[in-house]
Image (tube, rainbow over all chains, first blue to last red):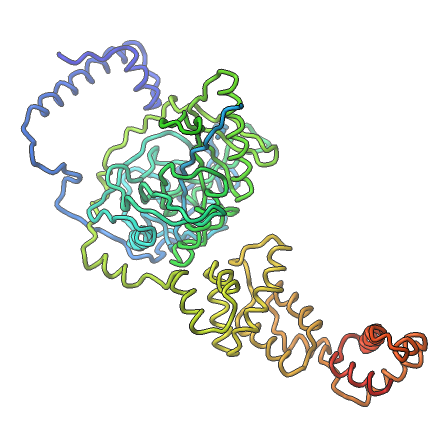
Length: 97
Length: 476
């Protein structure tokens, strides 16, 4: 395995992904990520000179909606997905700007 | 001699587009609905939901790009910006990083020092976040996702501005162009236009930029001006005392006229952008681009030139009226009805601007209709009301868009054209004010003013001042 993920990197990625990992999980994740990067290195060996980067897997473009309201009040359904509810709003842990 | 500093400012301006529906779903964008009544699985980020782009968002973004002299990216796409915050239910915001829809534009601004170009780095399309409300009673926050997914364009300027005055001129220019396009109402106080200010200072003549800070929560031109002045002073003080400016985001508190650090840029500002696999790329063909270009409205410069040719009104008035699309529309529609450009312009330049200023309103907030203004002008022309009464009626019309004709009838404000009644009142006034009468007869011309005033008062303001003058002089 050529790519080695440091403890600092796994800590940082954990913060970005909002994941709390145990020490064991961290070790496992370091190995997995190292292998992923190895695979990327393998892909990087390909000669891509003159090839446009692909931005979508399907050969499709311009899928649009017209600007017409099609949805009504479904707040009942929406709020069923809320972790908590108050005054028709999602209740979440106190968050400051 | 103390060191001279130069302020360097760049702006990120978010504008909510005036579409009927959100950017990726068919939910309404109407302002003020009960919480979460304009939501669906797409705009609340439910797994398995599929966003589909609103075509009108592309039309508006391209129109703004063309109006700001940008190059349109004919093949563009969307990217995901990843971060965690409860107002962002997908845990990513759909935005454009790699191929923004518009690039390399500029607008011309006018300041006391003359004309200047401000560069536009790029304009990209993205979605707005929900609204977080902090609960007063419980230890929690509440989220309303009605605004989640409302289409925005973000206009990123080059760091070309050097003062608060230039910043305001730039914002006013953007606002005017976008309002002319009908792409947004651009109200700072309602959040349909929001400006983040990136500011740094450097010694005059220096080539390198200093470390910049970003200021948020600026919702009026006044707040922007104060925040710029405050931040410039703060940074200069740090440098003068040998300290360094930290790159950070600061929040402006307009009541306290003070900014405080929100979060340091190093903290998790790593958004790990990647192309959004749910949305297909957007290809704007030459035909589509030409179609948008052909349907661009008449902008201010062309409008001013046309007014100069079509209407006999002062250049100064033309400048003020065309400064706001709404005012210009009101002017043209009223003139179309009554055919009196000079009188319409006088009402707009005089009473309308006075009341707007007094009530701290924008021209876009004007509610009276062109029909009603035309009727009021008609009432004055036919001498049905005198100018004092007309101004009173106008104030009511300005507030509530009443029909001036029925209002004048209902309140009995019509000028009394009955010369007999007037003659009787004048005789009474002359009898009651012998001193003024004597003064006038002894050559004090001004004394007649007092007698006119007394007569108008006795007639409850409903007399034609011209007629009062004539009758008075006749009887004296």
